[in-house]
Length: 297
Image (cartoon, rainbow, N blue to C red; front, side):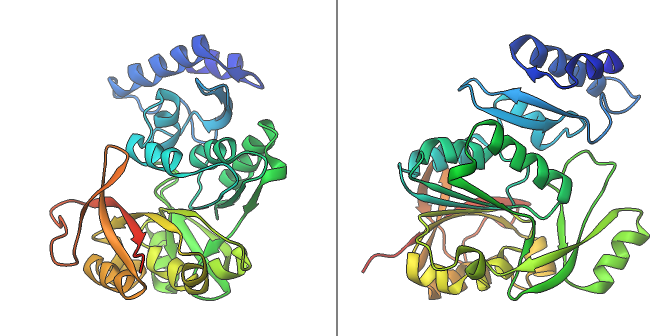
């Protein structure tokens, strides 16, 4: 089935019938012991119910499978699309294959701007192709880099056999990078830019950031943008990775954002709900997604 589907889908646009075949192949493989339905880096273009086009990796059982099913990060998607308005600027840090970037470019329209940041070379190239396929190149830009506290270079790493490009770590410490190599994982050297340098003083309305514990590094490098634009921020908060990568606990992350004039809210049903303090975070969970709302004076 897999070889047949790969041949069938090569250079084609995935529509309803094709998507059903792919989902069934994925499901059959999930229920069997022999491994993945498709090898990683098997790319095909998928048409969303809205008519938007998105390149997905059929060997990616994490992000791409969620996109194909139409259920990828439903609360986060709803929040972004409900928050963004025509003509606004959206920054997607850790844009991956472009699920949010493509839909945001459609929502904000030709007068809007999407700034998508993705360090993995191949993933970023298909992100750019998705924006081009929807004729959004004039309202978007893709930065193939990591984001940190200062310009430079460091490594990123991931388990190439896991089939989930969303599980990519920033490895600013050389020992961490070597540990990844020793485990047989893939490591890629990438350019690092600051968020401030990428934004360049433009007005930003909404930031989505999901970079596996490096959120503290990225936002420290965007202090000017946060102070000048006061954007709403949708952020993943990993209780184990923030200390390892950014050197701060989740509680310290919330305290630091409070010092910058932001209040942390729980994300629920696509909306910013209860206020979360640094001392009442649900630490029994692996991670949560939160909304940092600028405090109006």
